[in-house]
Structures are given as structure tokens and as C-alpha cells.
Image (cartoon, rainbow, N blue to C red; front, side):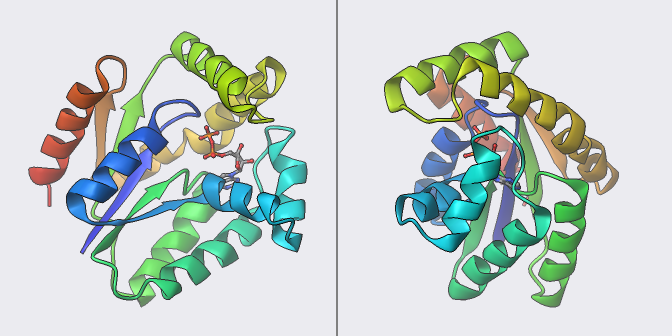
Length: 190
Ligand code: ADP
């Protein structure tokens, strides 16, 4: 089983590369952001709860994310593996996730971190906001999301380095070339 965490700041290209990884390695894609946007579109209680945080660029509370994630994993018992995109985003999420995976005997195989500088991230996110109308891709909210990333999510780099699971790939350039690098990291480490 291949359980891959695709890690990186907002706008690093996690969604783009997840789609390609899912096709190549026949994995189930779990994007917590996509799940929340889907819930918002369907006007569910979970969606309403998540939207209040997302629109401000803040994180949805850990317990809400974890409950949701658990139910998605358990609905995909026959999966060959998963790509986790946008999760975990806090140390608490990572610790609970490890417990959850231990119980199911499906450890994290590796973490691939996409390295992209802030200027490039802001340029990409502003462009995506104009093209997609995503309500959190506005300049003000983007700044807040990058703060949240630096304060709450970036410490996970040390967490996974400590577990010897972290691999970094430079995330600027031709998409297919970046993807090749991600695949070679995967192929030489699983
Ligand atoms: P991006 O990585 O570009 O910020 P996502 O779609 O992954 O986009 O996330 C959008 C928003 O959804 C986040 O700013 C946050 O509010 C919420 N969210 C997504 N995943 C998580 C998570 N694991 N924990 C808490 N909040 C999350």
C-alpha cells in the first residue's frame, strides 16, 4: 500500500500533481480542501461550519477535519493507497493521523514536500482566484493563509524529517518535469 502525503504551502501545486499521481499509481485522492468545498456546494452542516474558517484563511478545527478524514478512509477499504493533499496541516492532525493509521496497519510511506517561494505562490493564487472565483484566493486572504502555513503547518517539515519520511522537490518549472522528480522520489523510496 502506498500512502503518500503531498505537502506544501497553498499554491504549491499539490492538487495538480495529486491528479497525476492518482492516475499513475492508481491511488485514491483525499484533498481535505476539495471535500470541504464540495460540502459547501451541497450546503451541508459540515460545509457551513468549514466555510466560516476557510473564507478567513484560517484552518478548520482539527477535530472536524479528523472525523471527516476517518470516514473517507474507512469508505475506501479496498484502496491500493492514498494521496493526502492538504492534510495534515497541524502537528495535532499529524499525531492523530499516525494513531489512526497505526490502528489500521497502514503507515505513511513517504512525504513529498513541494518547495515554492512566497512570490511565486502569491502570483499563482491571485491568478487562480481571477480564473476560478475561489473566495479564499484574494490577496488579503492569501496573506493570511501563508501566515497560517508558516505558523501552523511548516513545523510538520521537522516532524516528518524526524521520522525520516520527508523528501523535498523544487516546485517551480515545467509541470511534467516536476512530476518526473516526484515519481523518481516515490519509486526509489517505496
Ligand atoms: P490551499 O492548499 O491552496 O490553501 P486547500 O484547498 O487545501 O487549498 O485548503 C483551503 C482551505 O480549506 C484552507 O485554507 C483551510 O481553511 C481548509 N482546510 C483544508 N484542509 C485542511 C486541514 N487539513 N485542516 C484544517 N483546515 C483545512
